[in-house]
Length: 125
Image 1 (cartoon, helix red, strand yellow):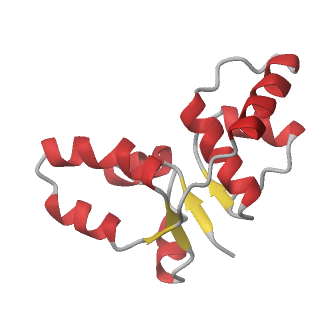
Image 2: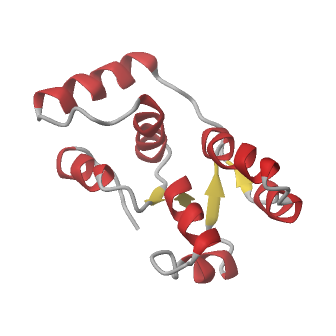
């Protein structure tokens, strides 16, 4: 089991850890993975805040390459729109697609991923 930790979890973890308290056990069990998209969402802000240690720690997490199936992604977006789910950005659709295609469990605090789970085989932690 590998758990793809979304940027929403990391942001909470770095701030207070109140809603992301389970992340510690996943780290201890070496179950977490990341991707380039999540790092792009996190690292620039951490650089501006001069959080070099946090950046180095994030860079030690196993990186799972994103393989975007563009036609599949378009179909995912069409299905979302048909179901009335219309406020999900392309980056989050890419993350959802990766989790589904690569059999990853997604750990997120974003409210729209549970909406996706209702209609797609998205495993959430």
